[in-house]
Image 1: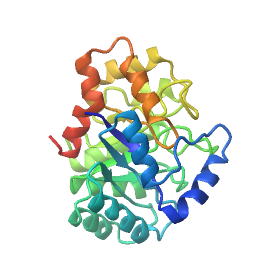
Image 2: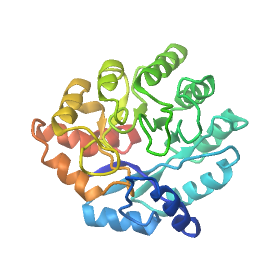
Image 3: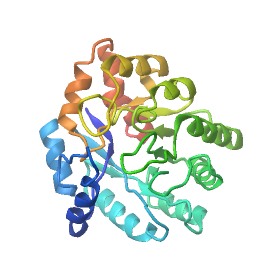
Length: 277
């Protein structure tokens, strides 16, 4: 079993335009067309059994349309699990989270860069706190985004947010996921502020040479996994912006990890977190 915990798709009528806009960023290369069929074709070629689809609410007022598409995915495809999306300026945050809960969504995606809001802003702390109270998984983009100069979720601010949410809720089981090895191009701060904490880290955009702005050497990835604990690492590709098949191959051949640790990363951790096991 392989579960890709970090993928993106767009409605067919919008996919070509969105992919062209996002793909215009220097150094960013697409590996599928950004559609549902494109993702599922990539999964079939790579041997991925399930993918988590992460919508990005880039502005206030998108909740209804994005949730409708996400619900369609969940109602239609057994091999895809779409999270919901929340914007920090949305009205009625609690009511929107309640709606997602009532409709069996498992998690919420946030993107501090696309909303130009720091992860430790009180609005995000409110969202994450209320999401945790409702039993949601929350995943954020972390570290550098090639389209932005300002980094809105560096590891120190991510840790500050996590500490405040833990103080407010007293959660004991990890529910929050920092994407991109905890923070793209912030490896030393990831190890200083996030490694060993009560959170998950996904490995999308982790491997140097495999896609846009990846910069960690294999030995660095192994060190983060070992020090954080393989039981809190999630396999992820960031498809369509990285190649699922190449990511699977790289992790499979990674030296220094046992078969048991790789199985945890490829599927067991995600199965547990998503309630599939």
